Length: 168
Image (cartoon, rainbow, N blue to C red; front, side, top):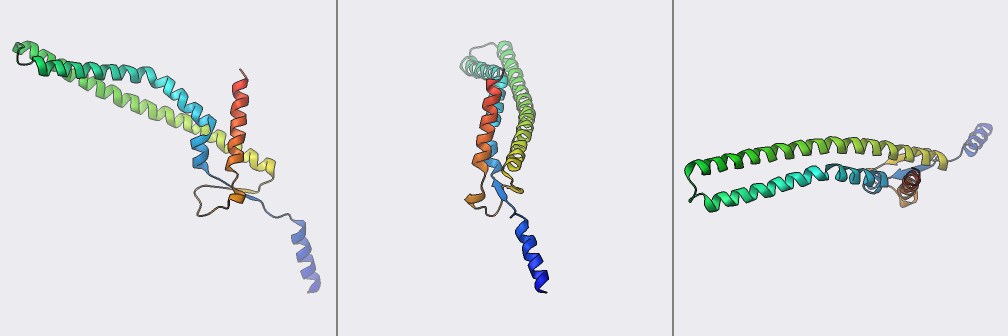
């Protein structure tokens, strides 16, 4: 029995303790430069269409204001024509705004998927380099700051983004 206890304790001493890390995925997704770059890319991509819609909305507001001011003094056919033009522009704006939202959602999802893969790969590579056996993502009930590796992974993502930005 003493021999079995001795073998068991020596076997436990030979295997190193398991290393566990915790990563706050929400914080990574909010602060990773890859995600921020994706957001900026989408803003640049959709800014012209958004500006065009805003211009159309301003034109619509102007037309409505004109209609309210001049409706009483306009002949009936001109007033009806202006009203039809206002309604058509209003429908067009609503349709275009909905299309823009839909396309923006699709593109945002694509960018987030791409960033998610990069972040996930960075976490895995970090864990392998540091000899961490298990990374637990958020949300968790509790994680000691001692095992929180979020800042180190975030720094790794920043270095990767910086290296990518320096390379043409």
